[in-house]
Image (cartoon, rainbow, N blue to C red; front, side):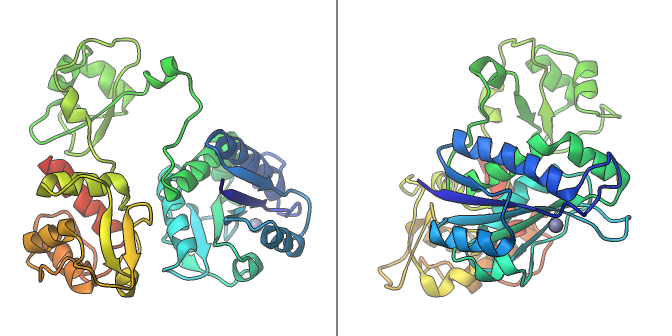
Length: 360
Ligand SMILES: [Zn+2]
C-alpha cells in the first residue's frame, strides 16, 4: 500500500483577499478532502496539519512515504491566477507525479496555469520521497479566493485523482452507481452536428446548448466533450463512438493498448524492453506501462511499428530520434504545435492520443 504524505500550508498569517480566512485554513480543508479521496482509493495517508516543515520532512522520511505532497495557495500581485507546481527537477518521479496532478488540477482552477517549474524549497530538497509542491490558485485575487473557498473539496479530489493516475489506479469517485450513470458525455467527431448528437441521445439542441454553455449551436468542434442530460437515457446508436481514449498527455496502459490495437501487435498494455538511457526523452511515459531496462533485447514490437509509421529507424527502442519524427508526423496532421525537441512531453503524447482517437 502506497503511503502519501500530505503537508498542507501552516501559514495562518497569509490572509485571503476574500472571506476572512487564511491559506492554512483552506489548505487544511483541501488536504482533508484529498485524504478522504486517497483512502477511498486504497492509499495510506499522513495528513500533518500541526508541525513545521522540518518536523514534517523528518516524519515523511521516517515513515518512508512514497510521495510527499505540499498543498498551498499562492499570492503575487493581486492580478495573476492559475495553478503553479514545483518539483526538484523536470525529469524525475516527482515531476511525473506533478504532471499527472497538474493535468487534473490545472483545467479545474479558474486562472491561467503555468508549466511545472523547479524550486529549492525545503520540503522539495530534503524529503526522500518524490515531492510535489502545489500552489492550487492565488488567494490574493478576491474572486479567486472565493472560488478556492467554495471548491476545497473539488481541489482535494483533483489532487487525489492525479495521484491515482500517477500510480495507475482507476479513480473511484465515491459516487453510487446511480450517480455514476448520470455523468455521461459524448466526444464530437468530424461531421457531427449538435442536432444529430441530440437526436442520438434522445434530447434536444436547446438542452445540450444550455447544459454545455454553447452559445452558438452551429459551432462545435472535433474532440469537444458534450455533457449529456441525466434524466433521459434513450437508447443510443453511437455507443461505440463514446469509448474514446482520454487525451491527458500521459502515456499509461490505455494509450499503449490503443496503440497496440492500431498496429495489430499483442494488446497487453506494456511497452517492453525500452532503454533506461532513453528515459529522459520519455518524461510522460508512465512506469505502469513502460518497461525500462539496461539491456537491449530487441525492443518493443509496438515501438517498431510506430517508428515505421513516423519514418524513424525501426529498431524497437523509443528515443530522441523516434520522438522527433513523431512530433513532425503529428505536426503535419495539425495535432502538435510544440517544439521538435525529441522529448515526449504532454503535448506530444496528447497529440498521439488525439491521433489514436481519430484512427480507432
Ligand atoms: Zn504557502
